[in-house]
Amino acid sequence: MEEVFSVDINADVGEGIGNELDLMPLLSSCNIACGGHAGDLESMKAVVRLAKKYNVKIGAHPSFPDTLNFGREIMQLSASDLYVSLRHQLSTLQTVLHDEGAYLYHVKPHGALYNLAAKDEKTARVIIEVIKSLSSPIKLYAPFNSVLAEVAKSENITVKFEAFADRNYNGDLSLVSRVNSNAILHEKEAVLSHVLSMVKHQKVTSVNGVEVPIKVATVCVHGDTGNALEILKYLSDNLVKNNIKIQ
Image 1: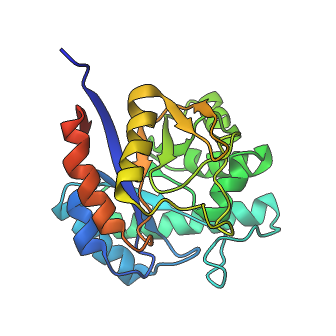
Image 2: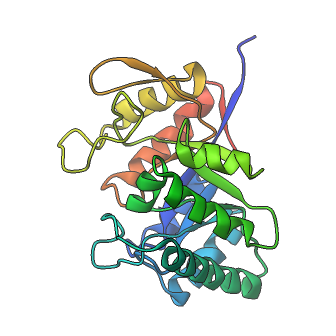
């Protein structure tokens, strides 16, 4: 009998794309923009209600406070200023969650903050301190083998290793920069193959053709990828056929 695997499917939402109603039934968790790079009280409220309706786990998606660059540029902030901003973003979402009778399951940093924290201990520690300041235990979505994941584990925060369904990887497990034409996987078949390799075989083929070890508990499909809905539907249908439960 073939081994049965499981994986969580997440997407970043509340970022102004407006496709949450379509995406939410196909997700098992979501990451809600909470004012740093996108999102406001109204968008948070609307997305939280959808997540509740479809029984989708709710995460915070905090960012450098930079709507102009959509949180995709590194900001030179002091540790204390970054802490204050991230704490405010999470507090805003938690206020909405409280009002809607929902709770926060995880935190997943956005964009440049996520990529910087993956390799920079100072930035990682700020994120971990913010999570530790919350009253209930919160999980962290972070890349495998990253500084962020190691700091979290050292502080007894549960980490769910995240990989990206629709992004190519370099040999060091960093994401291929979006300035490169091969950064994003658009073909649904290529995305499925990418995910199957990571979940079932714990390997990802980097852009230079080398297989690199990776561990994955949650897979992200970017909500702003043009054919995100098509990709999610294809994964939803085909992961189950390959003995992978979405949960």
